[in-house]
Image 1 (cartoon, rainbow, N blue to C red):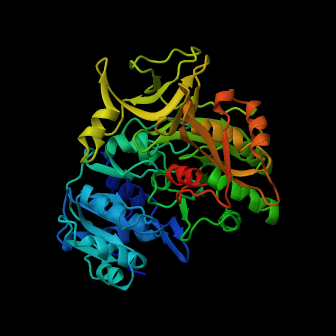
Image 2 (cartoon, rainbow, N blue to C red):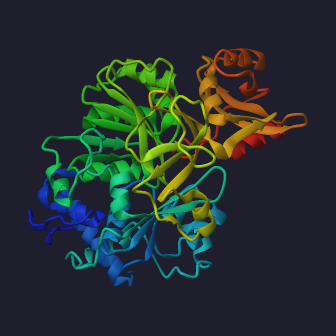
Image 3 (cartoon, rainbow, N blue to C red):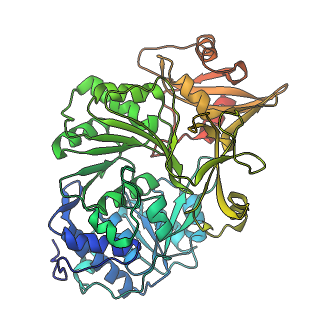
Length: 536
């Protein structure tokens, strides 16, 4: 372990919401606490701060400087947090890189993001070499491992005296199953509140009012957060930072998602809160419990889900197997941060309904004319947010103009999430407008139909797409995987769906596959599903 000779306890005041300033101030106060564990590596706040400082020195020694964009092409590990925080320390901008991308996607992201440096895993060396020569801005890179550790050991270990401010940038690339990745550009102060909780990770006490109050929110008890998504994903970045900024422990999984290992880690590390991504993680976790459980989850205070839909039936099952845990289903996006949640207290039941309570006054649903949807009117609009929102999409003025709009003297980010507002003010999400299906002039939202299909006892997972239809323009098609030993015919599925949704939303075709293809964080691959249906 590198020595932490530069560490001086309890000296840093906090006057900004800059993410590096916040981290350093917290580390100075709780240096001896364990901060992060991943695989065999465990780091205290003091040790993590030292490695962040040395990584920042390494960047400066390489000629990287304020405003430069530094790509992080890594799986989960302490190096990911080190590189991200170190970039913030020198006023640079870390850029998340999806390690599942192929060379064409990587080349686009590297170029679009104007990457100057890259920290990468040797596992990805071939892909990195295939694209790096064609990126004009790129001038430095390092692979983690021996070279990386040598550079850290040779650095000064002194915190750089770098210019930093609330206005420094936080850039998050969000991929998609429907198009090329887009870089969402935030001011750090806005990201601190909208994405990272504003000093209130559970969204229970309310955000802080001043920077020094962040330090007053440091917890005085052991609390362990376990985000299951990879750090290249917003859900893991936001939750990891939010709990580190409170002085908690953060567990990271160094390998791909493994449900049995998750339960074992919860037992071993006494995990307090588990953060999952929708059905794609909830269903395997429930399966592992049913086969290998029960497990000791007495430490588990809460389970939170975000980034992908969590069906009501799975929420209810989680409540059954975790009777002492609150289950919170959240919605938001890379462009908005956290916007709403449905919180089920221990032992509760969803009643088969998912309706979200808005987390702040800035969240609403706008109709096509940008007027706010009247509660109880039944009008379908798009989820929108005003207040602390991003600056726009990096290097994409057209996308920025389409998504970030000015109306009635306020600036809004208008998302692709279709929704309506109930009479009590809660929000019902219908699905992404970008994957809506127009059948005979009626709009069908894929995620709404998917939720109904997945409530069928024979269905393990499902994706819904629109396919060409001579009469109606498009028809609804379902691609499903089944639970072990089950069979399913279209007629039975259609009958199940008609009990919950209008007839025009019911699938007209069904393709059964061994496994539904999803992203590493559980998002549906609609291009893949459409190809499966058209090729069947």
